[in-house]
Amino acid sequence: QDLHIVVGTGTPVIFDVGGNTGQSVIRFGEIWRSPTVISFEPDPISAEVLERRGPGRPNHLIVRSALTDSEGLATLYRYPQSDLNSIYQRRSDSFFSEPAIDQIEVPCTTIDNYCQEHGIRRIDLLKIDVEGAENLVIAGATETLQNEVVSNVLIEVTFSDLFQQMPEPLQLFGVMEDFGYHLTGVYHQQIRNNRLSWADVLWTRNPV
Picture 1 (cartoon, rainbow, N blue to C red):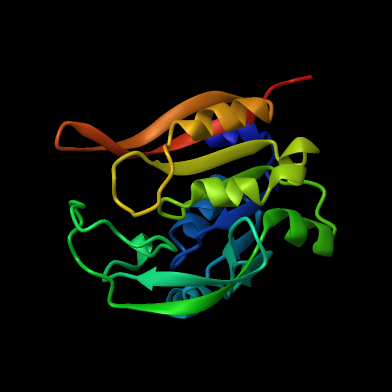
Picture 2 (picture 1 turned 90 degrees about the horizontal axis):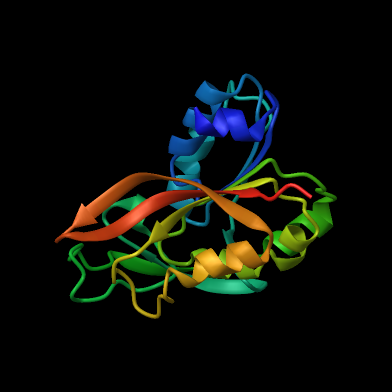
């Protein structure tokens, strides 16, 4: 309901960063009558499932790439639950104790480069679900965010110590404020061992 209100159009342009097997794409189709969705999914197995869900969904593009802060290749650690795949290794003391089933090299690019190459000047919703690497996606979108291309940003923020090399999550709140966004809402909070583990956080650009 909040997304429908803040986005304010029935035909939004959505970047689905971390498309996995299409959970968000299905949800977007329930919220809006005709969204344009670009899904970024680096895991080839998940991307194949996502593509099978694509027929019958107009204006849905799948990009088989990770979004980070640079161009090139990245190591993707694949876990038994594909929605927990990450370019970060999981900590051994994490409450998700399953080890990675394998690791693969995947292509990566940035939001800035993708938007420049494809002439994208409007993103109504930037959704990011990348298991601890949220800061890298945002770092690779600096020009896009500064140029006010993105109206709303929805990020699954990881608060618990799930992954190695993961930055302090609260730094992200300051970064988003510096880019000119205000905090709109916090949703789907998950608590483990009396601690906030992750939540979906929505930011909206401050009006000029």
